[in-house]
Every structure is written in C-alpha cells, then in structure tokens.
Length: 574
Ligand SMILES: [Fe+2]
Image 1 (cartoon, rainbow, N blue to C red):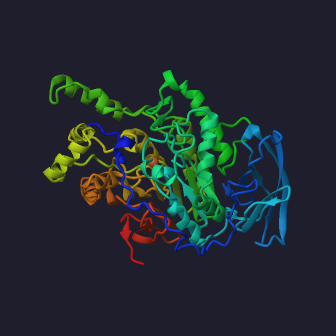
Image 2: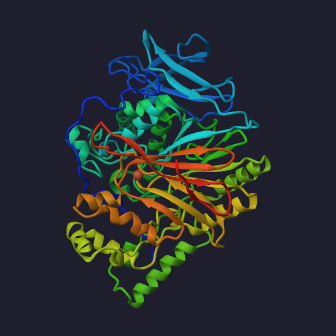
Image 3: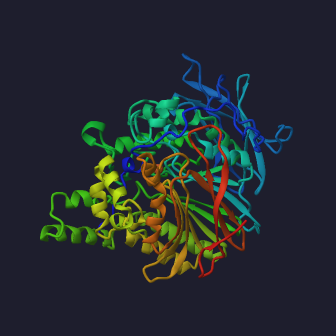
C-alpha cells in the first residue's frame, strides 16, 4: 500500500478542552531556574531573552525591543555577558544596532568565551534592563565530557494549550541544551487546526488569519514569544533549533506545500523567503556566513569527545514531493486493473533510488560529518531530526479496532473511512516521514555504517512518543530513535478521546504492527529528557498531566537505555 499521509486536521480535528478554568498561580511557581526570566509586560524587552548554537568559544544571544509608537527606525541595545548572576564579573560587553529592517530583534554572536562554561547575559536599552538569561558554551572538542543532558521538544501550537512543557523544562534548571525539532509556530488562522482551546481562553492566533506575509510571520513569532513559559525555557539554557513544516506551512517540500496555494497565496518562493527571514530574526541560531544559504539550517555541534549533535533539514533543501495515495487512487475501484496499476506506480515512485529527502549536498555533508566524528572517536552521534526515521507500517485499523469504535469514528469523521481503506493497502503510516523516502534513509544508514558511528536519532512531528530501533534494509541495527511528544499539539488518541472513543487503543495498535517500534505512546504531551554519558544514552519520557490548565504535574512515564551494542534499547528503571 501506499503510505498514508496523516493530515494534521485528522490528528486533531476535535479536541476537547478538559478544563475551562485557569487556576491562579502554579504549583511550580517556585522555579528552580533562578534567572529573572521576567520580562516585563511594560518596557522594551517584552519578548524575553534567548541563546543558542553554543560553540567552545561562542554562543548566540538574542532579544527584541518593542519601540514606542513613532520611535526612530533604528535603535541601539547594549549587552553584557558575565560569569556570575550579579554581573560583578562581566567578561564581554557590546552594543548592537537593530531596527525595522529586522523587526527590532537583536542577535549577537558573542565570541572569545571559555569552553564548557556557564554564563549569564542581559541587555540594556536606555534605562531599561532585560531579564537575565543563562547560557553555556560547548566543551572543548578534545575534552573528556562525563555527561550531557538535553531536553527534546517539538510541536508547540500556541492555541492548543498552555506551554506547560516549556515551564517544566525551565523549572528543572538542569538541562545543558534544549533541542527544538520544529513546529515552533503553526501557520493557521483563528479557526484552523487545534485552535478550539485557544478561542476559549484568549490564545487566539495573531494575526487571526493564516500567515503568509513577512508581517504575518513576524507577528506570529511575537505572539508565541510573549508567552512567559516559553520565555522561561529560553532564558534557562541555550537552544539548538531546526524547523519542520509549520514554520513555513503544512507538509512543505522543496517546491511547495500541501497548505500553500500559489493562485491565492502567491509564489512559494516568496512565502518561503519571508518565513525564513522571520525565523532567522526571531530564533537564537547563528546566521549563515556572508554568502551562505539561509535554507541550509543543517549544522553540527561538538560536545567534547562525548557527542556530536547534528541538526538536519528535511523540508526545503532537497525533499521530493510527498506521495499522495488518496489522490492517486481517487475514483478507482479497489482491486481493479487501474487501481492496481496506480498502486504499483506509487510503490515504484516511493522506491525510486534517486528519491531525495535531505538532498545530495546535505547527504554528502552528513557522511563527511560521520567520517570525521568516527576519526576522532566521538562516542555518540545525535541527530536532531524532524520526522520519524524508523519503519512504521500503517496499522490495520479495521482488524484492530472494535467494530462499534469504527462505526462511531466514521459517523463523526467521514474522512476516516478513506484513510482506513488506504491503511489496508500495506503502505507506511506516514508518507511525509522517512518511510516515504526509503532510499534516502538507506543512504543515511550506509554512511553511518561505513563510519561505524553510534546513531541516536531524536525526532519530533508526531505529537506522540516513540522508542524505536533503526534497522537498515539488510536487517542490521544502525541505531535508535527517540521521538518526543508535543508541547501542545494533539495526536490521534486525542481525536479519539474527543469523539468519546477510547484513545488508549491507538498507541498499542500502531506499535503492534511495527517490529521496529519498541514503545509508542499517544494522548499525552511531554518531552524527552536525554542523558548522555560515555556508557549509555538514556531517554526519560516525561509526560505532563494537562495543557488545559496552568496547574500541572510532570512525571516520568518510561525510560529506555542504549549502550551502543547490538541488543538495542533496554527498559530502565529509575
Ligand atoms: Fe506538529
């Protein structure tokens, strides 16, 4: 069968807000992260501070000023980096100019820092002081590093719930890095995907229409970055970010997107260009060197001898268009000659050895990285990746769900009927994932095998959590994959629950037909806390109790560990 692309509106068409009330305060108000992330509802620093892309001697720091109405088109901001929270030992300072041309965002690549150090930073504008951020530099490349702790997140849809996941990370105060694997913003308007809760509590997308223009994208980032929980998570640690599709629009690929219509929304290249501009203005990542490509967000970081962290680009650089079985088979009688021919054509296109996901330039860059890391005996290769890499066949919904559940599902969501029919054809669950690009996946695995690296793929996109084996076409284990749940975006199970159906049926159903999936869990928001040591990588799947109230609890739902050996993932206790 053809794989199935999961439409976002199917994942969360109906989402119940479990609680309408917003409780004052939070059980987590006593933050372990001691910075004053507070940015002020007044004053110029309304969007907080952020940092990212740490190198052994440099880190990017970020803020934005909100100039008063009628202010000049240019503004000056001063910045300090200190060794102590009280800024008694300031070791770097400077001034930066910003203005309308870059939406009054400020980004400084602070150099001349010491490796493996924690730093504090802040900005000044006139008499106003920003909140203080905590950041750190990477250890020296040759350093023996005992431990690295990452929080891995993705899919933070502002109207879909409160950013309690970000708050949970901030209050820990103990992560070295936050990896955001994409869908940092969503492009939809006020009545789009997963906006019901937002309309109840005033988290209505701004602007209220689907974002298309530069001003639209900027306003959307500004809205998200006004969120205190997101500001706190940014202020607590440096981030490594990459985008997925929704920083552009749904199911983006090299030359277009499912949610882009040239006739009414203009050329794809123009929309992609303004989305890129706003992203680089608002996100704490290093700009490309002069003349470099803003599209090539793929970049790599070293954490001493312990780990290499490679952030991938799987959307706009090289991705061939997603296959669409629903369109290819529309109007054809199942089992007919024409139907079987169309099905064979889809499978042929999917298996095309030339089919691209990363694109040739990024593929050879990645192979080079693997070889270099192997040459200096880096212990772990972490891949920051958008879409599920492991093989996940579409489950047999009709055989695996009770008949009354299917009947009620189809009554409530007629589009589920066709989706389940496609699932019967033996295709992958999601053709927007690596499963839709099997030759590209094998090329990545071959490069990893040739270099002998221990691959740990970290993945977003699905709004649900995964512990997977990565197995190549020859049946060999190439690595492991940890997929994080979302910050807020709903998944299949939420759709079921909202329809009054049992959402807990979905996770086991998907896992049962997928030998490479060790654990798959749906229906809970959260993040992966990844502890990396020379002996093992350990993933704690942290789940939070709700995104529909400010009060929440965070708890460890399961833990998986890999020592780099052929045995693969092992369940771990505390
Ligand atoms: Fe998402």
